[in-house]
Length: 394
Image (cartoon, rainbow, N blue to C red; front, side, top):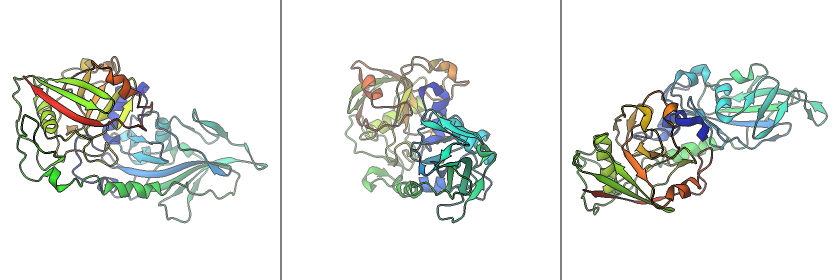
């Protein structure tokens, strides 16, 4: 999703890239269909997808990983452009190949396609004895028969419909280019959306949320119809022991700085909401993210409610040890959390937009083991699972 060099701007970008860190009261399929795909392009709050491929002479190249995402257009190495605009730089006609290229570390001009991950494709290169030119083929939908062919201004080709299909090609003039072979991944995105908001009935509170038992004996709940009431004493000290499959670390929570955030985190922990969840995005040397109890894929769900984030007074808190709740595109938070592992990223935010509810400590060197499971793109191929979150109160 993004490299550590993208800084805290990348963390903010994840708000939409993750489809709602705070809550998921609607399914991802609803998000994908939000704002009619009328050809005007996506708007802030939409969640569109387009299959894309880079076709060289007679074959498709491996889909790119993401490098950074500061506008809400990115990929996961799945051959899909994920479009979640969180500012006007990625809405309407600005949701184009140039914006995607910036996120994927790709260069697209009318004469060259290149990136650190692939050998440059240039106009005039040989393809079975014929020179190639560069073009972009765009189908409005996977089932569309005839694409629109663009041969100039390639970087400005815009994504004007949800579920478009795009082939960026280096081929001889007149060669018909195919749709990417992984176009069916668009259907898979819709398939998983059905399961994102359907926890077992026994793990759902459909009415008023009661405070859980302080001894940790309450049954697990992952979906709440309403936010919890005040369940903590803000004058008390709370510590969370977070145990994972690679070790444990602790978080000293700060009710004075974020009373509502600490109250929700403690309540969810005592309801075992976090048990069995995964750290779904890990960027070594920057941060990791977790706390989604229902999302498929992880990072797209929440507890069923959200509440306004409590912001720190300055960006100076954004340094190694910061632990907070991760906001959605509207600035609200729910169950998802983040932990900063970089030494200091305070200068990379112009405002204190990320809530901080405590400070983590790592007496067992667990953070290094967590970071070892991450990648520069944030993708996690060997998951780290949270097995329990135990709250002590004094």
